[in-house]
Length: 230
Image (cartoon, rainbow, N blue to C red; front, side, top):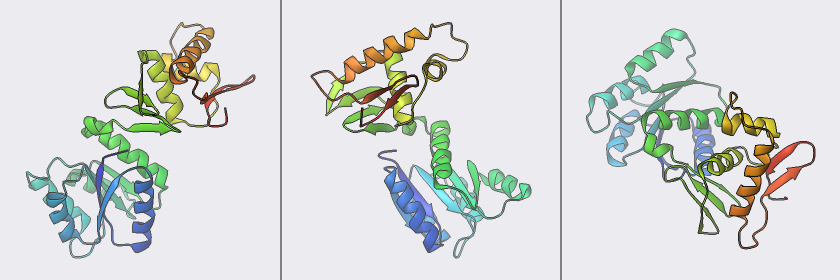
């Protein structure tokens, strides 16, 4: 998720290293502190788009940090995801009632946290949900609905755009025509299965214009995948 600044308030060095690597690999700009007091200052000074906040912090608990963030007009609208080893329902309710937008219980997987972050951004900061999905030299900007290959704009219709987005979100996974039909047109669609082939051909023609290498692999008797070995 490019051009998204994230404030990470966590005091466990091993967790910090893991999360920083995970977020930066996904394109986030990460500002980090182990201190609750400093987190409040950085929330104002660095202007993060989202805060990942551990419940147990030095000097000031994550719950109190969240409470103060919500009371300050400068930080009241910054999305907050709380991390905690406290998994009881009462703790989750307390965290959410304090103003957290989501609550993730340790241990968790990094992909789960990334998915939660993206979901919160889509919900509370729609403009930031516009990730730039990329594969090889192909880019799809979900905020502007623009597609580029090798820096050059690729003109796509809305259906081809949805098809490409689905493939970019699931790179190298093979999808049957039936699965693509469900994902792009919906389960209740009365579109014929052969329509998938038509739109894959259109998408190929658009993104491979000028003799570029084909990035869509046809898997015999299985379907299609976005694959650098196609």
